[in-house]
Image (tube, rainbow, N blue to C red; front, side, top):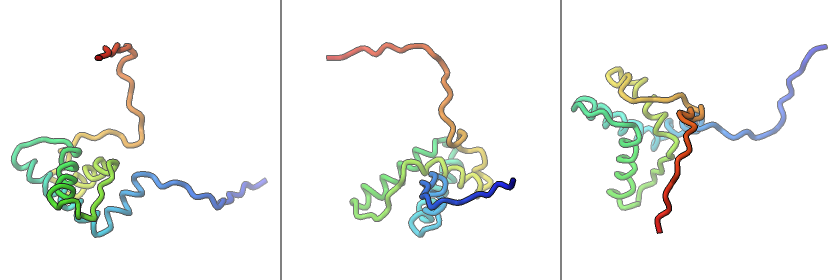
Length: 121
């Protein structure tokens, strides 16, 4: 008996990685990626080690506040991890600059200790 794979007409949701890959190849995504890389290079050369999220939020501030919310750029919170990987992949001097985690894996439980949170009135 042979097994036949039949593709059903189901629409599967795209992963964050797939959405990022599409977005980064748009003019807006390419511009944001280039800004991210330039900022990372500048910070690296000045001896500052920062997280990708800080650079990402600085770019968001630039478009949201400095450009008086007239910007067409909207930054997806899920993209900063992919931007850091892209920067380290494309620019040799940034290799290893950002700390990364495995994408798509749940956080590891470090302790089963119960934490009591005090109520404040």
